[in-house]
Length: 267
Image 1 (tube, rainbow, N blue to C red):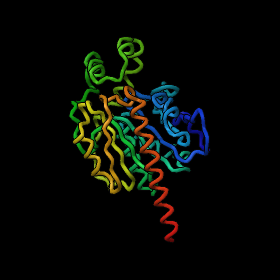
Image 2: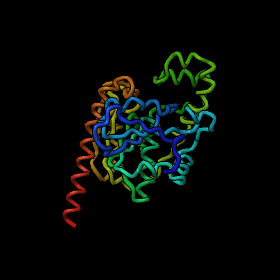
Image 3: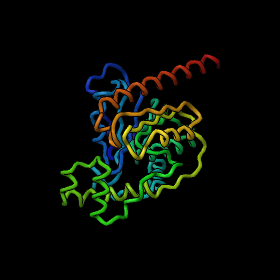
Image 4: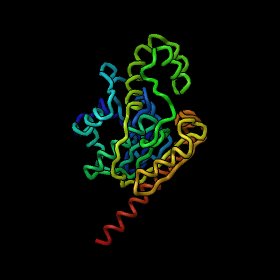
């Protein structure tokens, strides 16, 4: 197997009871790393493996230059077949906020190679063909940029107040925001996988109407799901969110399995 350890961190259930049936490949929000997903295995079905993608500029890749272009990031992932070792079983793609955008565009790239996830599961982001209600912040002076981070939530106050730590974190955050805010949608063929869209009920960036627009991007089943909370509901109401996610994972897996069985019986 190709050594992808710097790119992908795998988390296994602490109480595995059966063979892994599927994987969920998770992409981070701006500034996030693999540890955001480390404890998901405690709440998700124990036969689904959690694989978190680690982008350059964070954790053990802290000395690597972060990407500022989504196209360059995807080219690296696709050209070097970073995820190939993890696609030998049925898989889901998941991303929150910036991660949702990365997961969507990756799903488009994989579909061009006749590879599709069971479902694309996005969280906390407007559909890519709709304009974000938030003004760009990645080029703001450092003081204004920090205040923008504070208003968005998700970054602990003790981190925002630590100048030494912020000097390390800010270049990565600026790069991630540049990917998100510099993104320009191009029309793609509709995805041929299910699409599940989660959003916080009090997230000003992803009101229900904006979430429903994700339906335009798939020819298969679309399922909007609202979660109590703000933009970072995946952290603030984690247990409730992961219960909902677990249901979606198992239902989608069973649906695809049933379709495949029917297809095989007809051949």
